[in-house]
Amino acid sequence: MSEILDKVRGIKTIPIFPLPLVMLPNEILPLHIFEDRYRQMLRDVEHEGKYFGVMLFEPQDAFEDRPAPGSVGCVAEIRESETLEDGRSNILTLGVVRFRLIDYVDTGDPYLVGDVEFFEDEKKDVGELTPLADDVFALFERMAKAAFKMSGSRGQLPEIQHSDPEALSFLISAAFNFENDKKYGLLRTTSTIVRLTELKKVLDQAVGQIEESAEIQTVSRTNGHSKKKIDI
Image (tube, rainbow, N blue to C red; front, side, top):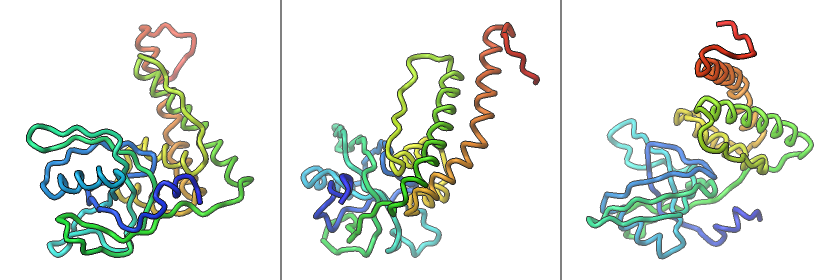
C-alpha cells in the first residue's frame, strides 16, 4: 500500500460534498461553508479525521440531486479552518487521493455519505514513464519561468519539485484552468502515461507562445533596447 492510500486506510465511508468543479490530488482548494447541512458536515469531519469527498455535480435536469454511483471524486483534507461569528466557515483543503463512489449510505445525517473505494494509477514500467515525466517537467518549468518573467520577475521564482510521475501529473493539471470535462477525464484515468501525454500536448502548444510573450513584454519594458531581435 502506498503512503497516500495508507492515509485513508480503514476508511469505508466519507461525507460527500457535491460542487460544480473538479478537485485533483495535490490541489489546494479554498471553500466557503454556509449551508446548514455542510456546517454540520464540517463539525463532524473536524472530529473524525478532517476528510470529506469533493465530487463534480452539474445537474442536467430536475431529477438529478446528487452525483451518480460509479462517479469519481477526490478526498479533501482540511488544512486550515476559520469559523465566522455567524456560523459560516472559511476552510483551506488539499486534495489527497481519488475515490470511486460505490453507493450512498443512509446515516441520518443531513448531508450525503458515500460508500467509497480509493484508488491510484496502475503501475507502469519506470523505463517508459520516467522519460515522459522528465519531458513534461522540463516544459512546465519553462512555462513557469516565462510566466514569472511576464510578471516582471517580482518576488522570487518558486522552486518546482520534480515529484513522482503520478503526483507531478496532478500538480501540473491543477495549474491549468481546464474545463470540468477535461479535468474530470484527467482525474478518472488510471494511467499516468495517458495523463502526462495529454499534458505534454497542451504544454507543447503553450510554452512557445508564453515564452514569446514574455520576451516581447521584456523588450517593451526597455523601450525596445534589447540585444535580441524579435519579428512582430
